[in-house]
View (cartoon, rainbow, N blue to C red):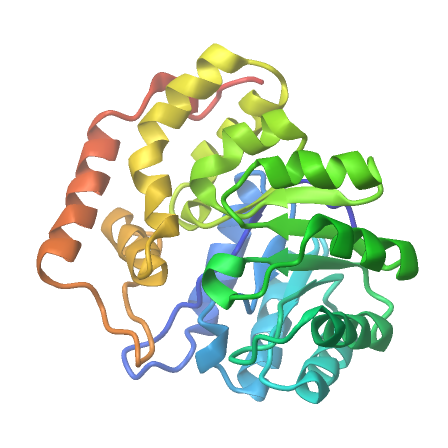
Length: 304
C-alpha cells in the first residue's frame, strides 16, 4: 500500500431503480486505472455511504477488488453511527480484499477528543490494514487537530496517512512540523490541490477525477514535479469544476458533471435529489465551458 498520488473518492452508480449498477462501477474503476490513478477509495461521502446498507458496502468492495485485480489498492472508507459497526465493517472489508482503510468520525455524534480517539483507535486495532484518517470538520463537525493526529501516530503504527479537508493548507505544514514524513498527507478538497502540494502534501483524494481522471493525474504530476507554468495553466482551466467539490450538494454536482461528459449518472439516493433549475444550468454551463477551453497540456500523450 503506497499512500501517494491521485486516489478517486469514487461515486456510486445507481440503476433507474436506485440499486447499485455494479457493471458500471467495475468499468468506471478500470477506466480510472487506465488513466493513472494510484488507488481507489470507496464507501466515502461521495459514494453516498450513509445511504448504503452494510451488505451493499461489502458488495461494492467485492466489485472493485475484482475489477482492478490488484493493479492498484482499493481503500474502504469506514463510517458508521456506532463504533461497533465501524469495527465490524473494518474487519469485513479486510476479509474482502481491501488493502487500506479511510477512517471517518462517527456520523451524527460529535464527541470530544477522548471519545473520537477511542473510536478511531478501535477501528485501527480491529484490522491489520494501513489506515488514513479523514479530517473534515466542515462536513462532520469533528476537527482532528495536528497534536491529536500526532498522538494517534505515536501510538498506532498502522496509522499511515491523513486526508486533510479543513480547506486550510496550513494544516499540511503544521502536521509536517510535528511528524515530518511519519504520515502521508493527502489534500481532500479539490480546489486546494496545487497549494497543498506546495505545502508538502503527497497525495490527493479527488472528486472531479470521477469525470476527468487524465486531467486530474496530469495536474497532480505537474504540480508535484515543479512544472509551475503548466500546472497553473491546467489549474486555472480546472478550477470552476474543482470548486463544485466544496458545495453543499457536491455529490449531485459531481455526478451531474459525470453525466454531462458521459462518464456516469446523475442519479442519487434520497434524501438527496438531482439538481434542477439554476443549479443544474450552472453546472452544465461549467462543463460546456471546460470542454470548449480544455488546454493542450491535458491532452492524451503529454509527457511529464
